[in-house]
Structures are given as C-alpha cells and as structure tokens.
Amino acid sequence: MEPIVPKPAGPVRELKLQVRGLDAWFREKQALFGINLDVRAGEVTALIGPSGCGKSTLLRCLNRMHDTVPGARAKGEILYDGQQILSFGVDPVAVRRRIGMVFQKPTPFPTLTIFENVAIGMRLHGERDFLKIQRTVESSLRRAALWEEVKDVLQKPGSSLSGGQQQRLCIARALAIETDVLLLDEPCSALDPISTAKIEELLLELRSNYTIVIVTHNMQQAARVSSRTLFMLSGKVIEYGDTNQIFTAPAQKLTEDYITGRFG
Amino acid sequence: MIIPTAPGRARVDSLMRGLCWTAVALALVPLFSLLYLVVSKGMHRLDMDFFIHLPRPVGIPGGGMANALAGTLTLVLIASLIGMPLGVGAGLYLSEFGDGRFAWSVRFCADVLTGVPSIVTGIFAYDIIVKPMHSFSALAGGFALGTMMIPIIARITEEVVRLVPANLREAALALGIPRWKSILFVVLRTAMGGVATGLFLGATRVASETAPLLFTSFNNQYWTKSLLQPTASMTVQIFTYAISPYEEWRDMAWTGALVLLIIVLLASMLSRLTLAKNKAGNF
Image (cartoon, rainbow over the protein chains, first blue to last red):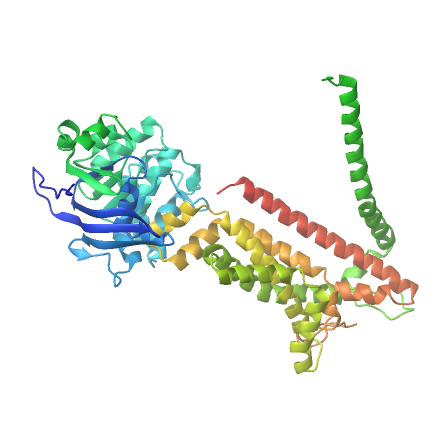
C-alpha cells in the first residue's frame, strides 16, 4: 500500500515538521517503515493506531528522544522549519529545546518546588537573570492554565499537586524553554475525565501559538482536539488526512475497521 | 487422609515461635554484654577532662583524649575529601553508564575492595605515602580511610541513584538539558537524600577503623600541628592503652571505647533516620 502524502483541504499553513521516508529501528527490529508526514504550524495533529504500531516511536523521533534508547536508530528526513534535524551534525539537545515533550505519566521533579520545576530548563540552559526566570515561569504557568491554582503555593513540591495539575505543570515546564512544538505521548491516559477535559481545552488554546502532535489511544480525544489525524499500523502510515474526513469517511478499509472498533 | 487436630498444629506453632525467640535472645546476649561491659568499665572515667585534656603520663591523674578525638575527626575529614567525590562519581558512572563489560568489572572491583581486610589498605597506604614521605602522617591515615570509603560509597550511590525512575531522566532530556547536567542536577538531586545517607554511613564505617591507621597516621601523645605529622586517633589510642600494663591507661581505653561507641551509634542512628525519611518521601 502506498503511503499517502497529504493533500489537505482548508487554509494551507506553514509546514512546521516534514517527515520523509523515515525508518526507525530498535537494534535489529524495524519499528517504522518509510513514514511520510507533514505537520502544519498552529494545528493539533493526532497519531492513532493500536498498541505497538509505532506511533510513540514516531513521536520520539521528532525530537530525537528515540536516540536515547540504547541500540535505537533512525534513518530518513525530518525537517523542522525546513532544517534537517536527523543528521549527525545536529545536536539532539538543541532539537529538544525547540521541540518539547510531555509523557504519559506526569513527571514533575519530586525534589523541586513547583516554581523550580518550571524554571529548571532555563536555569540549566544558563539563564541567571532571576526576573526573567520569574516572568517566564509565570507566563508558562498561565499558558498551561495552572497559574491560578498554584500561584500561592509555588514553593511547594511539584509532586504535591494532583495528577492533572502535575501534567499541566509538565506542559508549563516544556513551554518555559524556547519550545514552539509540543509533542504529547498519551498525556491523558493516567488522568481522570475532568483533568482530561482540562488538558484537551488547554491544547485547543495552545494551538494558536504552538504546533502540537499528540499520540492518543482515545479516538474521541483525537476527534475532539486534532485538525489532522494519522492512522498507523505495524510501523506504516495507513492514512493521513483531515480529522473529520478520517473519522467520517476514511479512504482505507483498515482505518474504518480500526475506528469502528473491529480491531486494536 | 488424617486431618491434623488443632491442638497439634498449635503446639508446633508455639514450638517454632519459641525457637525463634530463643535464637533472638541468644543473638542479643553478646551484644548486650558488650554494651554492658563497655558502659560499666568506661563510665567512671567519662568526664569533661576526657574531652578537653591531652593524655597524661602514667602516675599523673586526670588527662583525656582530646587530641585523639580531634585526630579522628581530621582523619575522617581527609578521608571524606578523597572518598566522597570519587565514590559518588564512580557510583554515578555505574548507575548511569554501567551497562557494559567495563562497568561490570568496576562493580566487581568495588565489591572486592569492600571486602579487603583493612590492614591491607593500611599496608598499601604505608607503601605509597608513608615510605616516600619518610613519616607517619594524618595525610597517610586519611588516605587509607578514604581508599576504604570509595567502594562503599560508590555501591550505595549506585543503588540509590538507580531508584530514580527512568521517566525522570527522560523528562530532563526532553527539556533539552544535556545528559551530564541532567545527571548532576536532576538525577543526583532527586537521589540526594539517599546519597547523603551513604556518605554518612561511609564516614561512620571508617571512623571506627584501627588497622589502617596503625602504620599510617600512627599515634601522637600531643596535639598535631601539621597534616604531615603522626596523628593520634581514638581507635589507635584505645589500642595503645588497652595493651598497656598500667591500670589507669586500661581504664582510659574503656572510656575511649565507650565514647567511640556512642559516636558511631549516634551517627548510624542519624543516617538511618534520614534514610527512612527519604524513603518515605518517595520519588
């Protein structure tokens, strides 16, 4: 089956990420096969598919986190604002500063206060101007819709927050560096419905300033938050297109089977 | 099939329980008799003099072990300066990069070194520091103790740092933090409570050593003015007094033993308390 290079309808936005012919391996085992994907700025793109289909691997390739797994490698092209980020000359640390990531399980640093959790990225990148750090921490927490809840307890440990708050803290933490792309790996799978709704609302707000790619097992969630959806199976792209079209009129039989719950 | 009667099972149960209690009681006998002996024999010379005066010659009453207390402190300090950074560094290496064959051999060496008889460490320090410098010294003693600390601290550090969940490491890397910074400022910081306990245990462990000091820091009846001079220490002083033919010196040895015991007990209780606290405040 030919991978489908998207021909999106609607306003054509700037391409933030372009993936071309991406293969990825864990040691000898190939996990991704010739992935093509265009991620547009200012949109939420959802990656869906059954467990083990490679969607998390694809996500982790986008900010070179895939490199951190022993024995893992990737080949192909990933362009960020037109710049190849998958070549040897590119420092993965610099890539991750622009392309932030939020994980399935909230991971606040337990020995740090709420304030320090958000500030640590800047601090470890060498920022010493405390006023600037303070301003950034506040604006990041505001953007993550957490400021009102934590502004009086900034000195409490990050782990004292509820699961949903912790996840928004992790989003704030990722926003506090020079990020303009946010990758989320099943960010709600450990959260209750109310916290999940808050995160989804947040993603819709963030989308105007950030490019968002989200891996989700929850198809309703993909339908609610994303403009475009990529459906993967066994490490290959099966279908990519407008979320509406994918969920109402999938072009591929496999997509339809998955969405209607016939497998996966 | 005969179903055993309840009284039969209860009898076996109480018998086993009784055996366990007996074993516990027997195990505690030596411990408590040691404590009793040290306290009863060391108590009557335990006064302020002990902590502020130098040893006095035989026949002159009074005197203390002030110089030996200071000496032990100095030796442990020097040992810590050597053992703590190297131990923590090695422990971080083992936990963060320790998958290869080389790390395996480092780990194996550390385990072997932990078990090396401390007198051997003393001979080692004698040969590479005392001999070339032609003098017993606090430096040599501290070096011997520091050598002993390295593997202890390395293994404890490795174990507590390994407890830091992998997803915290990932989260740090995903913030575009270079690996070395994320290890030092995120991973190590998260494990700091446990690491501190390890440092404490390491220091306590070497503070009560005698053998490595016998021919490195040696002994001194006076205050030591330089790190390059022979230095008194609690343990060697106790040893010297204990084998002396003089009644009053042997009394002092008991008091010295009591003080050393109290210091070590307090220190290990303190470190266990901090460990318990840090375990409770889980990662």
